[in-house]
Length: 361
Image 1 (cartoon, rainbow, N blue to C red):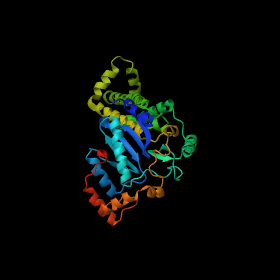
Image 2 (cartoon, helix red, strand yellow; image 1 turned 60 degrees about the horizontal axis):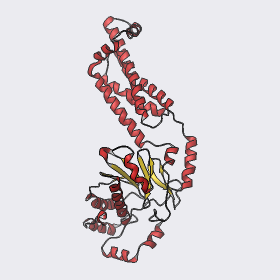
Image 3 (spheres, one colour; image 1 turned 30 degrees about the vertical axis):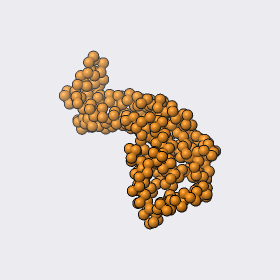
Image 4 (cartoon, rainbow, N blue to C red; image 1 turned 120 degrees about the vertical axis):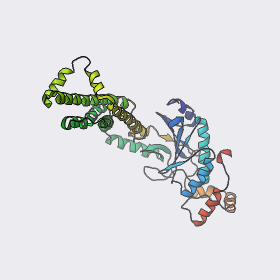
């Protein structure tokens, strides 16, 4: 699955496409589409309150028949879908209908000011939430003024500095204790990635290649210290004499080939460090807190009247038909909008034994 091709059908659904993710509002719920492992589509829905355990049991029972398994975060419902985006949208509509039927409401207040009637959705930290558009704009201006500017140059400097710092334990171990521990090579790329982001490198895929090149510099430092140790140990030189002799040998043809053969299988640890660094950078790019401008790029204006399902408890109670409430009570079940009492838990237990599939309605 290509990174952006699969997002195209979401444009017609008024989703905002940002890099490899799609942000939008569906039936009043803020929703984020992203690409998960094994060509799966991850869908994150933000709700007003995290579902109670009784609600989770009913939700999972209905979703499990479709092979959908829900996970829960802080005011978030998460699941993955194997298939096309259009099919994922249909499954999402079924899930949102199920959430509404069981009292799991969309966010009712602005995530920034806490007031009611939000009219937009925007990425707030690590959660896509409902806000007032003027609150999002004001917060973006305030946050951008306090942010430290990022640049590729700062990232390169940070990666090189981090690689050198990561190579120091190996150098000191070699020169002071006449021992070369291959496991210490893992620290070089890990510190390179940490230095890249610490000094203000941009959160982009280019960071991976910058850190790889910086790690090669760090590995070269470790190799140099190993050669100094060999010269001092085998030829009886002091550390200063070993440094001078090694610098002279670096100009000879075949120097690095011979040195690499001396290291042997210890470079397996270096490869493990590179793989760990790649995972570290990918995680940072995917889940790290974005800049104010990047978060504001996810802003989606809500359609008044079509995207909001509930705007408050008073409207929710007024919009619920009397016949539906009576039928629900006679059936031993009523949607929950607050913490369940003992009688409600009994009704939820009976509800779990009924077969009802929102996707088949």
